[in-house]
Length: 306
Image 1 (cartoon, rainbow, N blue to C red):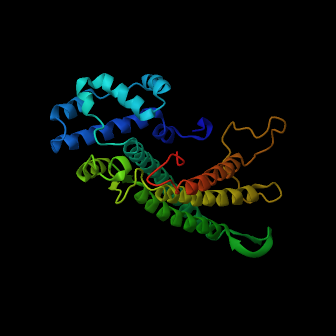
Image 2: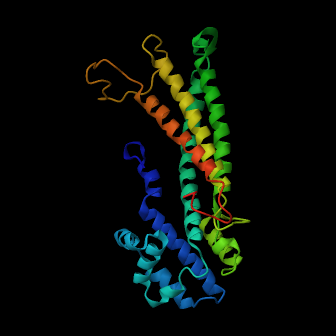
Image 3: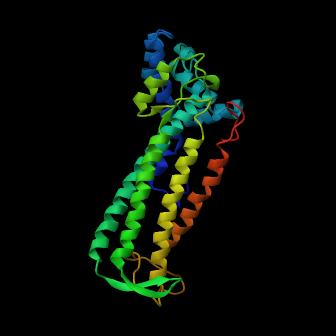
């Protein structure tokens, strides 16, 4: 993620440390489910729970040789677990680990975004009521039209973000899906009970019919929803930018103490936050087409969705 535009709590979700932590938990839960079924020894599941660990630098070192991220992770994991590691990942394929972990990450990211929307909705509602009778010129085509109020303008944004919150909540539900079904998704070497056990422990739903991957229409739906949220953000930011123009100056974004607008013109109070939001919204929307392109795969899977 771009550090300048990332919050620590969001960036942490996508750091290697968190990804490998989720991988370790998935492998441990799967081993515990297999042990409960008598497929692998209980001692193997206990060893993984007690000794399971990893080092990112070591995984990267192994991957430079194997050119396979999951094998590199499992190799490093085995270095900690010892001989019992031969039972780890039994019946699973790499996508079981990768796709289920991605679902956890997207669910965690959605929770942060939902909390953000709640905060934004609360502010918009408060300010809409505050300015319910704040008269201003309505505009169409950028030209003065009939009078309106600033409160009504903000209420329109509130309604849009309310719709987007409902959309994101549904997209979160749809993306929070687990697949532990083995090569090409047939459960030939691992039972559905393992998948159900892992899904419940991680707060996910079971993928009803997987191929070797979780179907990518789920991811496309998620990113399309993010694009709608981003579009709403840009619409609000664009409104602020227009109202903050010097010849209008009907509203302006927060300008912090000590903040500077220009190295050459110190009097300037530029709408830099709104401009940043406009640019970032375009980046979010740019992810939609790749997400849609990723829906189509060759047979049970290829890696054109990677």
